[in-house]
Image 1 (tube, rainbow, N blue to C red):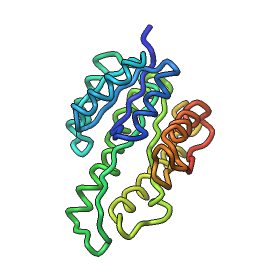
Image 2 (image 1 turned 90 degrees about the horizontal axis):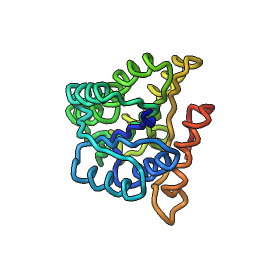
Image 3 (image 1 turned 60 degrees about the vertical axis):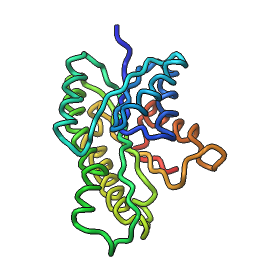
Length: 215
């Protein structure tokens, strides 16, 4: 019998790998998906050295065809995915008056539309399984907009709204949706450490009670 898997879309270079390690310690196989194959390979290798089964796959969340190709591959491989974490983000520095329509379209393609594309594919798998979970990584700029990160503020606000609406829609179905809203930098030695952050993701998944955790 195959181990259950989690897929992390856009693990990044900080807490994404700590989340992967946390779930790996509890017996989950890890799938890392992103746009930088070499970084993903190094992260997967590091997890493997710790005894965690990990693989990586290229995905461009701004391209629906790329998203479809990834999830088609996962279905062909018979993966039993219990959790998708959407952590992809476009970080653009700039005030709202500096933004162009093209900027917003490009960033929304990652910050929001990519999450919608991934959800629309994973939900088909979950409906067949009868269970599953999605956790979106939120940001404090959704609650307190930043004038120097105007585009990300727009995106995170929209993603939070989307996640909480999904949580309401799927309540009681066996499919759980939540968002972990991160309001400060995550780093070793800081108030919000990678360990504390990964604990919040695992707690949300394991308990399935809170649809939003604000860190």
